Amino acid sequence: MGEFKDAIVEFLKKETNLEEPLIEVPPNPEMGDYAFPCFVLAKEWKKAPNDIAQELSKKFKPTNAISEARAVGPYLNFFVNKTIIAYDTINRVLKQKDKYGSTGIGKGKKIVLEHTSINPNASPHVGRARNAMIGDSIARILKFQDYKVEVHYFVNDVGKQIAMLVLGAGGRSKVSFDDLLEIYIEINKKSEENPELEKKALELLNLLEKGDKKVRKKFEKIVRVCIKGQAKIFAELGIRYDKFDYESKYLWSRETQETLKRLEKTGKLFIDGFNRWVLDQKGYSLGMKVPVFVLTRGDGTSLYPLRDITYALEMTGKGEYIVVLGEDQKLYNEQINAALKELEIFQRRVVHYSFVLLQDGKMSTRKGNLVLLEEFMRETVIKAAGELKKRYGKTDEKAAKAIAYGAVKYGILKVSPEKNVVFDWEQALSFEGETSPYIQYAYARISSIIKKGKKINLKADLTLLSAKEEAELIKMISAFPETVSKATHELKPHIIASYLYSLAQKFNEYYHMHQVLNAEPKLKDARLLLISSVRQVLKNGLSLLGIEVLERM
Image (tube, rainbow, N blue to C red; front, side):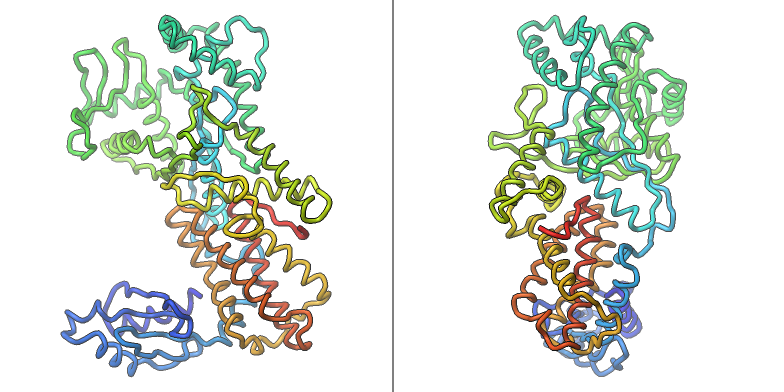
């Protein structure tokens, strides 16, 4: 309903001289479709808000789009022409189909999106998978809006965790992906009892950074097995990457040395008492007692922050750079952005996310206190198949997977990134409440109705859609582009997830109150067009979350 809102904004700008008039949606549809709170003008106009509302209502002239502006207390409420919005919205949905909702704001602009980027030391757990799901949905939203998105996975292949894994693997001639987690947990337990093992891991890292070919081969072998295994798991969920970038490339490369030289020119880089290169970050309000960013070890070898700054410089050179990071890396990201600002480079935009919790707290790969994503997916498919059998007396593997993976994604994506997710299998797989199966089922139900209706009349008389519930459905459909736009600007998929649940809920309420197939012929045609539009929007929205639709459930 963007163009209707635009008409209201244009009127208010002209009559109030406000640059950005605040437009609200009244709590009750009968009060109007949009409302302008007149409080904001009271001080400047030296009038009571009620009087301002009355004055503005007299200045408004009805248009094709907006039929009335009515003063209701301190608000000026606007009423949209229901016939115009019905024709405009439904015809637009049916014409644009899979592209309905896109405003095309990207216009081919290049975006580098880095997500997942978990340590390649084991099979990913559900907590880390939240990064990948948020990142994948953001990529889908941006592509939908016509941005040219390149998805990157920055592989931390030279960290202490990988060194511990190489040490744990020892002289094994062959290590499979399934072996990695067991090896990692075992070596960490041993190192707690014997601190010398940690020293040995650091020695391996030192040799790697000095270019020891034998050690490098060991690291590459382990990392290759892990990345291949992780990529396969994520691909099963429809999550894919355009490029895998390896941190080892930046160990002590020409680019990394160039970064140090550039930072040195800022006058903020110095060698501390431990012979390390550190960046002075005073003045950036980082909340640190000693605001310095350590970039190298005392022996001159680079640390992760220096390599990450170098990587960020490369990514920002390709386009706008967005990265998905855990909330525990907020300070670290501020330090990276402070370094980029010193170099007069555009800072990377970050989406922070909180944790997926178990009953006893946060998941940890090192301690083995986790739920592996692969096992989690497998278990969810089994539970979804059981639910299908209970409902319909038979199971379908494709349907079970679509429901299961959709349940996992929706259960995680419906929560705002900065909030914790406590995943509940039973709730996530429910066909009731705010879940993916509930939304998928609404789509399948509409598909079934349309199939029974056999033929859709594209020239149906939409003026017959006069019921209050029909007006509400049309208004919701028309709000989809604005919803997608908001999710795009804020990089928050949960906005779309919440909208889809509301739309499915609104459709179900409508279907329980009004006949479609048994309505008189002309009304039936109009209602089939209406629910076809709902179906298309549900499909488009679920696609942005990476969730499949099913024609039958």
